[in-house]
Amino acid sequence: MNGAPRPLPAAADLYGDLLDVEAPARRQPLSAYLPGLAITGVASLAAAWLSEHYHAPLMLMGLLIGLAFNFVNGDSRLHPGLGFASRTLLRWGIVLVGAQVTLWQIAALGWAGFAAIAAMIVLVTAAGALAARLLGLGAAFGTLAGGAVGICGASAALALATVLGEKRVNQAQLTLVLVAVSAASALAMSLYPALAALAGLDDHAAGFLIGASIHDVAQALGAGYSISDSAGQTAAIIKLTRVAMLAPVLVVVAMLFRGEGGRVSAGVAVPWFVVGFLLLAVANSFVTFPAATATLAHQGTSVLLLMAVVATGIRSPMQLLLAQGWRGSAPVIAATLVSLALAMTVALLLL
Image 1 (spheres, helix red, strand yellow):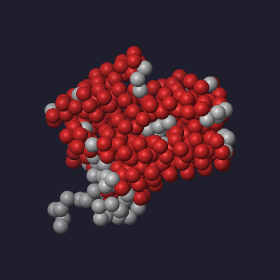
Image 2 (cartoon, helix red, strand yellow):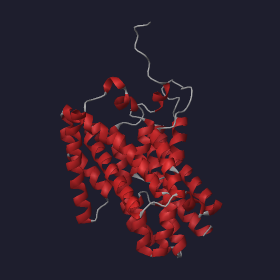
Image 3 (cartoon, one colour):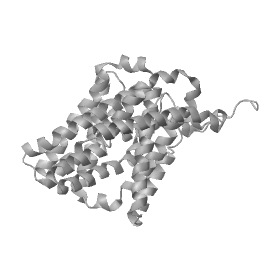
Image 4 (cartoon, helix red, strand yellow):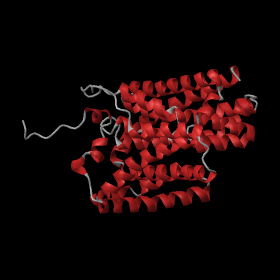
């Protein structure tokens, strides 16, 4: 027994894929990461250029470019860098999201508004999970899809996939959710302002509808400010409140799925990137960061999440992605419809 390998910590069972990059026996020299990071960087620059020149969603362009580069995944020399980009860079990107949220923004909503947003996130995530179970896709995949719609789109999907681990949600399923959420968010940015006008909502109510229902932050702000400055400011506060809910949702998801696969760990270890997200949000609430620092944090978040999305697209097994079929998009569609219905109801009745 003395010669047997020492078991890894039980907490690792909660996050499956953490073992791939964090087990000491699998550490790589720095030079091993450079080829994968280089190809990810080149693809990310291409996606950023397309997004800027054609006014397309940045994350959607990143996904499409990553999928276009999918053929390079056959070269094993790229795997360490691609894995680092899709996991470690993602986690640091999630930490930087905390610099865009303050406790005061959440408090400004009041108890009714905050409770409505929290309830909507729960119901939208449940809708995605229910749709997935009815189609035989599994609760973990449905939670990923519903949580991405309910919280903050692609960044939430990436964070939830990190907590769930590749043993529960594979790369093909993650990529499918990212594509579906990005496409749905872009469509919502175009349609929801018109729906708000048809419903006769004032700027405050329209901002709530936009901020509470559109998936990605950029699209929510774009749709809100397309109505008016007042609607855009309301949409920003509501949307960033949803972003702030990412951390507690990640902890709850970790607790709910800890016993899957026949193992139940002794306790729940909160991922370090969740702690970092919370600490930065608290610091942002009590310390006024210089404008340059806030801008740098925002840009850093975009860069890190873009590289993570691109690397995820490159690493995705295309044969499994194609095998998912239309059924794989159904949880995202169901969650999107529930999110719109709930946000419209609250906007009409409470605002």
